[in-house]
Length: 126
Image 1 (cartoon, rainbow, N blue to C red):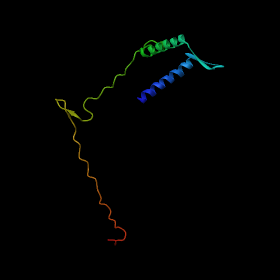
Image 2 (cartoon, rainbow, N blue to C red):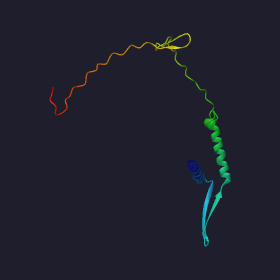
Image 3 (cartoon, one colour):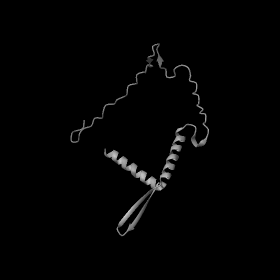
Image 4 (cartoon, one colour):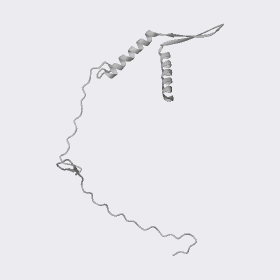
């Protein structure tokens, strides 16, 4: 729940900052003998104009072939190269579709040498 509130607060702050720099509203501060007054002037026509511009830009991005006012380009896809006949991995398939793996020779035995014999300190050497 805290994450959702933090997301909402971040969205409000972003809207306030972007709106201020886009000229959507102006804040005026006046001070008189009784205190300080703040006035917010909202520029509704500017907000509507910017929203329409954003909609149009999103529409051109989402509609294929209308990017930057150019005509749609034909996509030329390369053809894959011809594959050699046969099975290069030597896997075989049976008539029912099962895969038969090639036989793998047994690996050669690893030479294992016995561990060196050490004598603990204080005992006579052999």
